[in-house]
Length: 468
Image 1 (cartoon, rainbow, N blue to C red):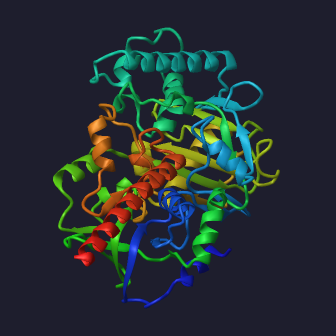
Image 2: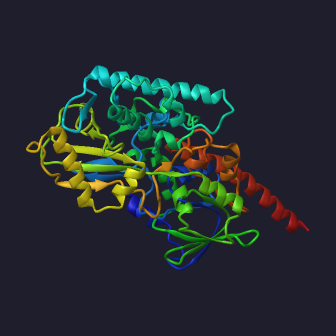
Image 3: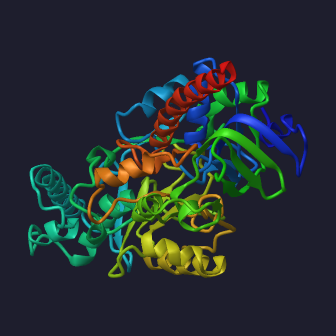
């Protein structure tokens, strides 16, 4: 199926029209498609999915770069051992198990001047950091002190002579920041999901990670229940029984119920106008949860100048400054000659990189790589691309980040609570897998079940009124 044409299959009324629909799903990402799949499995098809982009999947999005398809967004089947593994198997999703280990040539750790740090030293620091994090999780589960941050806990437990500060910073970033998008001082002890840290399936399927949604998208197209290129600009919920959604092209949809699956970043940025404004308790909950900054930088080089390790770690006194590079032609990934590295930055560094000229980013990375491999060994990249979620008006961030004070159940409840006939999904609203693709899918299923109960109730109410 050509996804760019999928949105043209439902065009009743055209641009500037008004269309009535029983249930309207805003967003064809993991949450929206999860809801659509749930509706269809229950035999309910009186709904429509509209998506602002020209593709389905949201932050599950692959593009062509350097002659291969690469994922700009979600790339790993996480959490490890979770339900995503079965979903991937059902879709026959091609993945490579990537293990970021020092041994077996998985991880090369180098100082700024190109000195290779001994494996034993790196292993020692990785073990130290991981043990402290596990200990922190156990402590949080049995403590009433919710004010401690991960940094508070770590500070008193490091061995002063275990290794250099720079190496510890790099390992901390690799184990913690890389996963949560924030440093330890900005996260509570109870961030949970320590099973996220470790090996998991890395998607290399040239059909894209989005293939996991192929079945539901095919059914949506067949039933003419999907519209692309419909960017929502306002939602009017001032009427008791109808919600009016207006798109940038002037099209208006009137629905009995609306499922909103926008990312937190979009809602926090005020890019969608609500009439009347959302209540204070809802905006407080939405703004309480931070949106993580996680940026991939894709680099195509004229030749390969690095070794065969899957990961290259750059140890610098400047914490988080281009600390990790993934070799996309490591064994089991892409073909020899691909000559592509992916650099990763998160948090403040991701914000800085995404808001500076691309040429500046290119120059910074080349300088780092020449420090590692030598001035004459590193050519300039022939192409460069950012994932760019931070400034994408349909995303405004990568995924929800953990909170400094943990995730109070009250906040989660408020995130999930409808406002009138507007229901709220998205990975940030899931109580178990926030930050993951599967969290988005679960949230869509959760809200679809709520809506179906509401539709039944509203229909009974209507018939009751008609009977009178």
